[in-house]
Length: 418
Image (cartoon, rainbow, N blue to C red; front, side, top):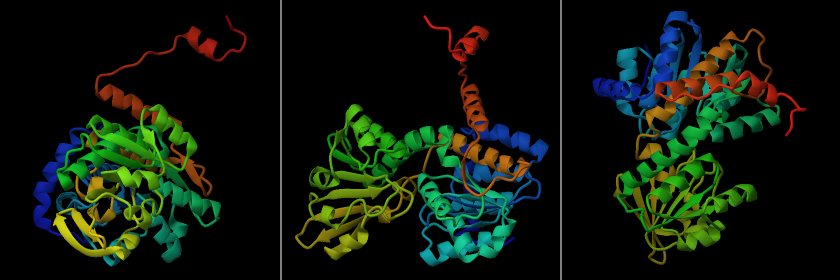
């Protein structure tokens, strides 16, 4: 079996951590047990470009249980958990191409290694697999049934491809499922980003000015958790509606040019490029801490920062200190890559349970759908989204009411007023 991992001797350690994650993933476990019986993905070749974490391992095991032939590479050079990669190869016989800290050349070699298996379905986290397939491996497109996308960043790219008429097969936007972005983006990113920043710096958040750039679902979660740690939270936005929501939620809102002067800790979660730029670094406090929790390492203008830097040194494992020409120091975390996976372990397994349940069931939907979808970006079918919520609630012992016949009639009528 072809693969490329750091160290196969880490496999037993990885297996234990995967088992620990599985204990908090009851929805995916239920899907896995059904897949083992029904084998809905029998013989389907799946190419996955995801963060290689314990939770992703659970998804890969579920797809294999359903009969899929899955190959996995990393969707970020710093997010791979090498012991997990080793366990998948050694204990599950799943080809993995991922090494923590791999350079850009190796990163794309690994993506191409997954494409070499001629996948019929793609699972993407950021759309690098899909974009590489379209730009460099177009001869494989005719064999593709469809794909899924996990992230806000990836959905933005794929919708742009669809609008430009470049996208060649249907993609299900797993990121946009309610049981994904309401919970994964808000609670998962919120907690794991704080976890990454604290692990990297061991700094106290209470009393600090914490700047959150972007108030989408990830930004909402990060602002909520920062405030919970006692920080004075400032939000920057380009969308007036989201900015208004942040104000109504009790946060200060201001342009990044103003926030840059007062912030102690910064974190970008926008999905856009150069959110914090050279001119902003130029007015930050001495000792400011700057991080990113968006998918790609483009949100911080590190090239611009380099231009005004006199010297650099590594202060801690995930902290690089840039000393500016006037002597002020700016601390960049995790090379500007998503800090919740660079310095921490990513989202807790209980929230990834719902995200990856969406992935597994969306794959099954693509395979079973007798009328092939036209090219485009599609929402997760509402029945799947709702079923995942029901199973999740049931797994934690929570149940909801059912509408009476009278209530259903009232909600569907127009002539029953006061």
